[in-house]
Length: 512
Image (cartoon, rainbow, N blue to C red; front, side, top):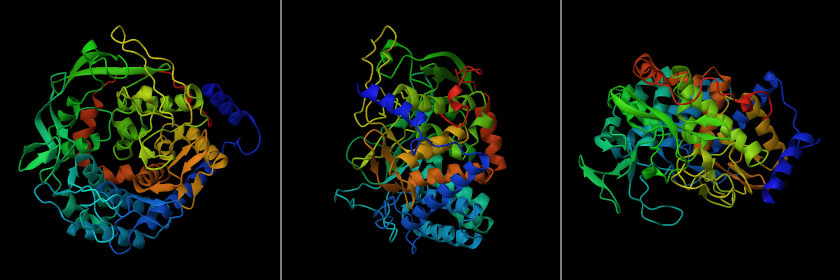
């Protein structure tokens, strides 16, 4: 019954007049609307940033008055690339952008960090830059940690600054040149397909509780990143681009887990073929959801699939792999929200929980994790089975869907019309928009809204809008000749198991 009601709501949003029906703007109108979104989003970043240190808080409440007492390398990087976008879109002057980013770089240069690798701790106090050792929200002990993916986003931002703000190139490079992503690389880490060589999740420079592996005078996580369609690939790109990680590491990660019954715990049985790149055996596995074939992420969310694409023009450099997969990922998200779950809206990625705190959201069917990242409050589960190895589960009864606006913004290069329409309907039909732009998450069935802003999600919005409205400014600033020479031919040789002529009607037109 819940699913039937959701379908009725979705149909009503398309057909009825009044606030629920939003006319599709023309191209110029769409860009004006997107520019207005960017201006408000930037306002939230300014409100989160301490004027004494140039460090942006992790989050702030909806009225832009109470920022959090912690920040991360990702947050700091996101603020810097957002300032570049704000400059290029005319919200701030070149001098203000330079002053803001310069202050942040000066603070970064004096922050405590791991000297041997050049990597930064996961949490700092934005007021004074001290390392967080006691979590300010609950008093729990924090064991300072150096995350490979968080440092990857900081390094990505430093590359953007080098390319976009020539006056700060030296300051940015003095920090970036010390960051060695090869420190995370473990040549002994293996995958089920026989490949060897992966990056670790991160390390501690003091003995932590729980599982850890000591080497190189630090304690590494027991886990390594072994999936291709995940956000840690930015760290792999950076390491290969800098000559710190061997090129074949890109192919050591798995497109899907194996298709054999020994691995029947993952979401569905993949279809694929065996091949070799860079001397590495690769299983080109893929999933299929509602007629759309794609290479899955771990959780089926937009962040894992598309955030690295803000910096690396993956769809241009690798048209037969990423070029096909990014479009398929976006199409699957639209199909899920509009048709399968019947929410009437789409865009699912980890973000705030409308009921409080933080949660993972995604399209369960599009992720390898069999427990999945749900798209609704009820955490409805999709279970396609695993061929003859595991029977399919019951059909999910989707309920109160949670849409995360940043996920829709990430889809701009692949479905601009549907993105603009989706966001306009979210803004018109819910109390989803505040002084800093779209609030972080909306439960579209109940209308419950997470009225806060996360600097990471706001920075993804700024990056996507900068690329869309200012001629790929983030990508142009990030990529240099050496990086392109090392990465473009490496990823461009691959063909994912996705048909070149796969129909994706969900990506056409101004509506979804």
